[in-house]
Length: 121
Image (cartoon, rainbow, N blue to C red; front, side):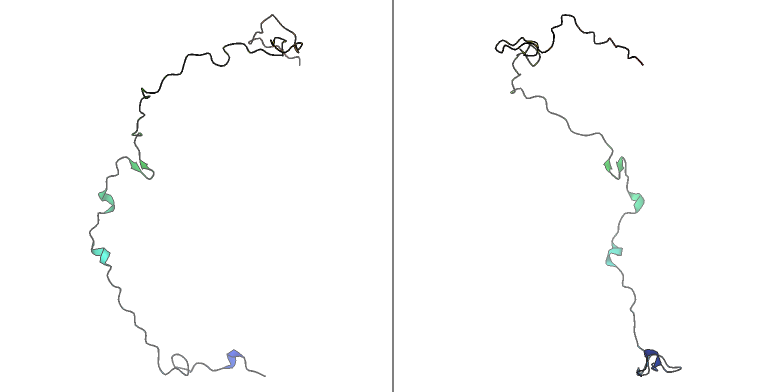
């Protein structure tokens, strides 16, 4: 049968590293170099005056205004608008061109908008 990986002798007693390694590996690390940006003079954290500034910007009222309406724009003409005159309708039979009997009875009494009828329980 074939030997398993743990059956091989890869280290020697009292020796550093592998059997086929003549001496210990030699690695060196140099010292940390100085950052040139550290020589730059910068203000400290408390050297600033924030005033009315926050993380969302300055806390001031908007500093814009609206221009007045231009004098070159003419005013709209005085004419009746919607609801100023009655529209003829076939609902009450008052259309001038279409002869249609009214669909709802004509009432002469006005409705009271504030009258509330009680509902029976």
